[in-house]
Image (cartoon, rainbow, N blue to C red; front, side, top):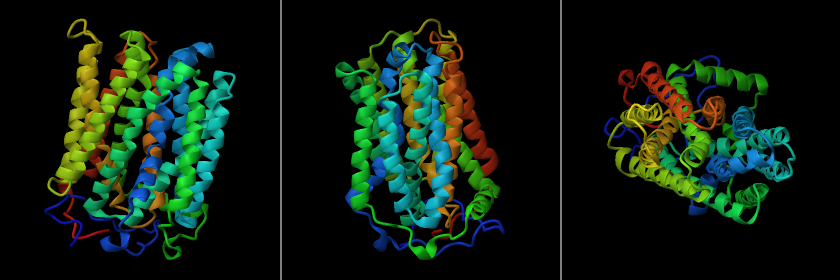
Length: 436
């Protein structure tokens, strides 16, 4: 049975390789040959959960870290920015490495370094050193993110890939639910340094399971033998594809919208509205439940019945509307508002991301039957770099207003929608005739 077709998805035809991109590799294995076991699915989900684990478990401790290290909130938020920037830059290196040497070697090396860097974060005596160690943590941890996406591209294509990304969201989406709750509970028995000890233990467990259960998915015949110059030419060829670039930027700005919420919500909920760390963790977990449910609706009910581009555009529209509502509430247009309406708007914004993030990944990777590692690196780098820029902007006006968070969210959501409609132009694309 073909995996894509006019009746199932509006994913674009793969772009014709340019002179700067390598010729297409052999098509991925057939569906029957590439079924994955539950343990492999869980490992890929765990690797995809590295960003929320590294970020969200730490969120309830942000006010405590600011107090313990005698630093303002804007400086402590740079610890999030540093980790995010490291994950972005690391993917640019590890993605092409995985195309050249296979998926396992770069993954396991990066994961070992992630565990070591996370353990060192627990010893940081100053905010400046913590920022530096978080950068190293992000650089090493990027291996899990980029390789997980590349493995999915090795194994799946078309709407099946979109469905698998939604399945990964079900698994990795548990991390934003449990991570703040775990972080809040750790704070009951230890200070913020204990959170990094727990993160190091989780990273070590994930490394051991990946080593034992994740086989190589990129055979030698499909690897690229070129060096740095070849990798740069491949990335340049990918970025020259306007449609791929449009999906990549749309995903990057959408992620920045989400990350501005991740970065600012601890201060908005706890400092402005006076909620406890436990209340913040419960609200954060509820939003993550919405994200997971939307991802499952996307994968189980929409993909294959409604075009991926239409679902993506609808999701971005909902995100933009929720961001505008938050801005109006933050600026006092509706008069004084309490935590409930603000939390409701945040819930809608985060939930709609479940129909945005899986589809931007799938639609972009459908354009790349070759160099999945490099394409995955560009997708991840765009998301994490834009998110790293957005993170400090949400705190520029101090800890007593949510206006900067809402402004950043509105701007990024609208830019994401503009990139989708202006660059990818889904209404102009031909229906696919088969897999990539």
